Length: 97
Image (cartoon, rainbow, N blue to C red; front, side):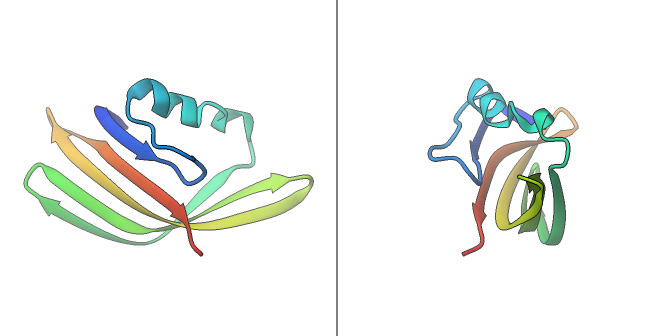
């Protein structure tokens, strides 16, 4: 999903992930959380030639210590069409205050 040149500023990250190795490191434990989910809400998608921008919100949910936890967050995703594939080149996510 991520272009080799992508940068990720994740919802829980203290710094951004500027390369494929750092992005993989950010997501490395996702598979260890079988109850983790994301539900997308309103999104605004704009396409400008071979670049597209998606701005919106999503809600993360998970079970922690036996209780369901929800975290509303907002995002901006920038995609680039490379060889017919839309890949993420920039991903910023932050919790809703």
